[in-house]
Image (tube, rainbow over all chains, first blue to last red; front, side, top):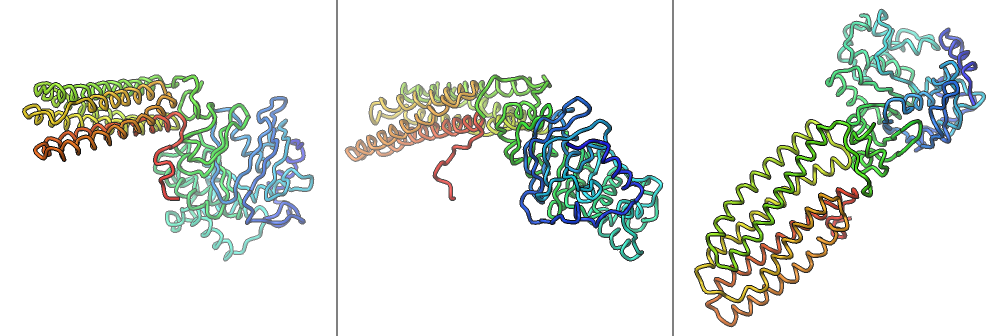
Length: 287
Length: 230
């Protein structure tokens, strides 16, 4: 069980840039196993807000370098679930987590795991693009990395270009890297946030409704980006848009009132789901 | 997924569109079934006038096909159906094609009925009406299975196809024997064989519909079982 108190301390450390172990590891003794077929192994995962239990013992495995979509009605625990994958849930006062989450076989809730390091390996992109509006595009991209690293100009430029290229934004902003991130369009701002998340070289990208504030063209760009990123990263995406889940993901999990109803290949979920509740939800016979 | 109590869609307009499509398919199937009956009746009774009226009826079946297709495209574009709804729409798109083809085959029979109405009978018509009765039942039951989401009934339709095939082989052998015995019957005998062949094709289309019904109900594709390359 993890309480909010311990993690708030590590979060404070992250914000103040206190020294941390090297990226890519959760602790000194950890072993990277990038080639593992299973990236996350989740067992009996439960989560609470105070006395309210919002996840009820989830069991599932998330494949390495695949896109996993989490769908379900509002309040079903989708966002809470992915926030348990990088220990952001515990940042909420009174929030608790039970059960087990293993990343590359390592228990991320182990006593000597540093949540800050975990969040470098498991990056997150939110519903609303949240660049630092007055900070330059370049500094936005490097903001996460600079919390823990001193960067010389050459490596900063290299990282900046690599992250912006990975986020399919480089060609649009390469001539105005010193302009404020807040001046970009909504879709560009979201890709800037993805670039910021990629700059720290994570293994996993969690996306919490990343397109819900974007127009259809910007949404298509993000979906195209997800398709190209899946070759290098494990992606878990929460979405209310079932067509989007059907388009971008390899496997889909359907959550309902904090329980995992069905978890199967996406093609199967959207053509012939096994559970009546999944069927009712995705065909709009719900509520 | 096995059939269970059907819930309605939260958006009732969506339900209304699906109900509309279902009603159109039932209406089209009813017209096609009537065309089968009338085409064979025209053949057996040497009723050229009935055959001509039945050919005219095909225009209405064609219109049904176009309208059902349009409605399917509209639902696909507006609703982006999923799961059993998606299987229903894809079934509807295929079903109208099968029904329209059955209508065309009934027209073929009517044209032969007109040709044969003015020449001597090759042989008594005891086999053709029997085949037609099974084919009509197959179309009717396939549509019933579709409406009631009844995979058991659909399976029954698929099994009847063997009976139609057997009757077709029987008719062909019979006609060949008649033609061997009397070479003057060859031209008309070939026409009779064609009629039997078209009835057999109608049964194949009804079988297609029944297979699609099983896919709609269970999400399991049973077409070409054991015949697809591995």
